[in-house]
Structure formats: C-alpha cells, structure tokens
Image: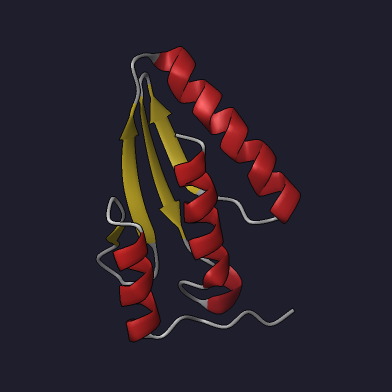
Length: 96
C-alpha cells in the first residue's frame, strides 16, 4: 500500500495542530517528550498508546526512562511524515 508523504505546508499545518510536537532536524519525523509523575504513569501511557498503535498498525519510535517518554512519529513507507503520523499524534494527545 502506497502512503502519501506530506508536503512542507501540510507538515506546517500538522505542527500548528499539535503545538507540543517539533519537527526532527532531518524533517522526516515529529517528536515530543512527555513527563509523568512516576514510572507507573509513564508505563500506563505507553501501554495505552501501544494498544492503539497495534490496532492501527502504525508504531511510534520511543524510549522510556523512569517518568519520561520520548516519542518520534514517522512513516517509513512514505520516507517521512504522513497523515498516519497526524492521526497517531492526535490519539497520543487523547491519552494524556
């Protein structure tokens, strides 16, 4: 299945919709760092996102250290950002 890579104006619109996210230096992903009260809350957040990601078959690149979760979203099939990343960012924001 072919996935459309977003244009620069489309990426700008996506970033305007999700002000907590930033464009990665290479322009191929958006990133955000989330801080929680403790590890349990961070892991619970990751679990909710993981269940959604598996359901829609679009998985974040992420890492977790204690109460901090770093997330990057990109669509490898598109070679950069796609509407799938916007949908994932929207879902992630809903899990906060």
